[in-house]
Amino acid sequence: MVVSDSGATAGADHDETGAGRPGRARGTRRQLLRGLLVSGAALAVTPLVVASRPDAPTSDAAFDEVYRGHRIRGARTTAGPALGAADWHVTVDGRPLHLMRRADGTWLSMIDHYRSYDTPLEAARAAVDELGPGERLREPAPAHPEGHRGVHA
Image (cartoon, rainbow, N blue to C red):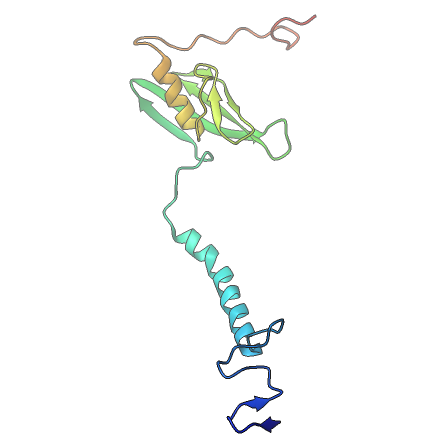
């Protein structure tokens, strides 16, 4: 290593201000290691922070409530047609309310099918809102003796 009259080191990777040469890494191995450790610690703590937050209403929780004079009940059922998918059995005053899951994860009902809702409970409440005073859902159509419903050609 050669030191000039001005005190600068000849052949060093840093100039007098401590900045590195263009095209060279500017941190030390210690700084790099510290950055990796901090990032790793943040990743390790994230699940704990998320778990400590208050639970937001999810679409997985069963419900049983009276809303505007109508009893709304809903429970998640076993796997639906798609692997890993779940269906919901929702009733309003004991009569089934059919819900559909949209591709974006929201829900709509057959009563109010112009708007989507974040949870099955929200969709059921909206369906009750659409019912007039004293109105109830219709009874489901009787099943065909062979198990088919509707018109088939």
